[in-house]
Image 1: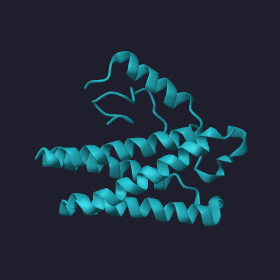
Image 2 (image 1 turned 135 degrees about the vertical axis):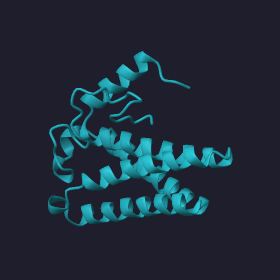
Image 3 (image 1 turned 60 degrees about the vertical axis):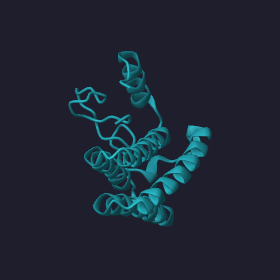
Length: 160
């Protein structure tokens, strides 16, 4: 199902105006959605599409890892990094070996992370310091520039 023009603009506005913790939640949800799609593609015998979905999920998890500020985040940042490194390794293993167990492990941990970050998003924004993530001026996402982040011809899409 192709998202509509209105949905694209709504999502774009949501991303541009979201708090850093909400952006992080959107990234987790996108990685999880892509991992689930990879499983569906495997079941359909569409291995090329499954690998593409896994690579996109890996890119998102790698971005989340890169945005953790280990210098300021201390022990918590180290523990979160370890979780995302585990997810990344599971996604890589799943892609290299068509390993459904590793894919299931990644999805299971992403679901836990999603629930954790949903709870974080329910708290007032003022109660969270931004120091946990590198600040690029727009939260956890890299600057988008003039490109439409929702287009199929490049840029960033949380729908992928």
